[in-house]
Amino acid sequence: MNESHTDDMFDNEPTMPQGPEQRQPNAEPMPETSAVAEDVGLSDLDNALAHWARRHGADKLVARAFALASWAVAQGHTCLDLDRIPTALMSATNQKDLAAALEASTLVGGPGEVRPLIVDQGRLYLQRYHAYETQLAERLRELMAAAPNPVDIDRLKPGHGLFLADAADPDATNWQAVAAFAALRHRFTVISGGPGTGKTYTIVRLLRVLIEAARAESREPPLIALAAPTGKAAARMVESVRNGLDNMAADPAFDNAILDHVPQNARTLHRLLGLGGATTRPRFNADNPLPYDVVIVDEASMVDLPMMAKLADAIRNNARLILLGDRYQLASVESGSVLAEICSNAGVNRFTADQQADAGALIAQPMEPATHVLADHVVTLQTSRRFNADSTIGRLAAAVNAGDVATAQELFTARHDDLHYHDASDAAAISRLMDRLADDYAALVEATDPTLALAELGKQCVLTAVRKGTAGSETINAGITERLARRFDFNPAMAWYHGRPVMIRRNDYRTGLYNGDVGVALCNESGQIRVWFEGDNGLRAFLPSALPAHDTVYAMTIHKSQGSEFDSVTLVLPDYDVPVLTRELFYTGLTRGRARLDIYASQQTLQQTIVRRVTRISGLATRLRS
Ligand SMILES: Nc1ncnc2c1ncn2[C@@H]1O[C@H](COP(=O)(O)OP(=O)(O)OP(=O)(O)O)[C@@H](O)[C@H]1O
Image 1 (cartoon, helix red, strand yellow):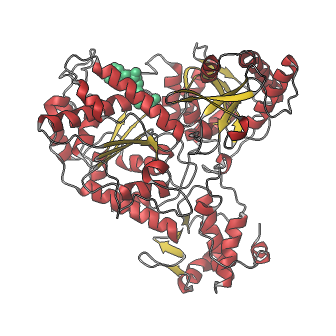
Image 2 (cartoon, rainbow, N blue to C red):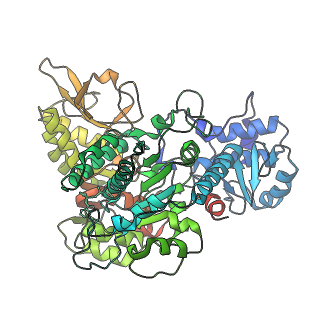
Image 3 (cartoon, protein in one colour):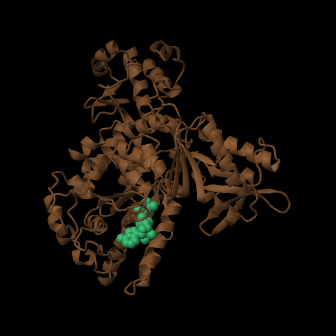
């Protein structure tokens, strides 16, 4: 789109558009255009912003800068790097003149000023995103600056009742114990780890220490909140915490009274913060902080910058914020990659000399001290209990994270029980895949019991990088539906049929169905369709007309699968290159599979995918380290 097109768009626009946060309230994020997809086309919103600026006195170049700042946020960046503007969006000649034009404009300010655009250290922000970034960095720095709490190291030592010593190497550092130590010591901690590395295992032990200590000193036990970015992730978090507590309760020294103080539910961050309605200001904020002493957020990699800023703002000064997540996973669909930025700037398990001294014997090997305190607030768990040393999926995940194409290719080409590689994703290969899946999913059309049908759905899923095209989720969903319709003699164009699996696309507090929830449609004895979902207190059935927005879900995009797991995953990448194919996307997809992974992709696509990283432009890291 050229600049004159922006001029064409200049119509009546009474108020300034606020930016991508208001693109479509509660709209389903469009995964394919996030990540690194440097989609060099401006949206209507970007152009409307330029138009608004023009009407408020901006020259053409500054108006263009408004559109680009908005475009950058839609790409997942927090801001626009003024030195890295794609020439497809602004000519090199115009880029040379841009700094002076911004400097001269009354619509553009610097840090501390309230103007629609802010220039800060060579980065151009929509004012609101500059505010989120500075507010988050400031709040995290405040939490990190709090004097460390004393920690009873003996209680955490492996073999002392909470954490186990490694049978093969009893003197090795137990990083779960170290993670608990860091989270007890600080007001802000990130515990990062891949699937099954024991983040929940660590958290339940940490809560036990906090509750036991309060009870021993006759203090009120801490008020704890569990939360996650999506309803689905919140439900999984509760299940893991319950399992973790059950597992710990087997210890004869465990006092069951502790269970009374661990919440039995987890909320979405929207719910926790009281977000909703027309305003973007949550009910709980710096002036009205959350009442909790400990706030634990799971799947924190999915939390975008605005939400993380609001969360950090709402934490009481003397409370603890603990983020759990996987630093290597895809970032949030919306702007920012807060968890990854915090983690990559902290390094992997390197602490300052002070923290090492306080950890004492918990850290077995001496380490080169970190120079920045941020390092003390991040602990990375690296041993997966799900993928043992022999697991090909686990080895592939490690190779992908390291960008080690050679090892990944060795794993693809050798024979394994848990990894099956198909060197193509063209129409013929996808057609064969759909035939196989239609055979598997026939069980759903034949199902009569909703519990068994839902269990069937948890067994496998196809995950795609894109929605459209031969290897897209929409195509695969339609192809499987058609095959089932032929076999069971129903009209594939029919919206509802017995056995149709669906996934909810947005949070709906009225029905209690959340983005990512998966259900199955079954005909009852009177021939009426009811859609069944698992709920906290058993199964729930809905009339199809009562459901919030949903899609058929034999296949879903990898973005949509974040926070879900299946026994078996089939990962399908397109046989042409698209910018969304990144190492983080592939890693996220492959780690959704517990026991079996099938990959459909050419060698060349896989190689490109493993090498390409998500890059998101932001100033958060610089601010956190300043
Ligand atoms: N140190 C340990 N010793 C024995 N079992 C462990 C240990 N750590 C974790 N586990 C077990 O491994 C499994 C996975 O642990 P957990 O659920 O805590 O991992 P997670 O990192 O929270 O996983 P996810 O990312 O899937 O939520 C659980 O069954 C847990 O009991």
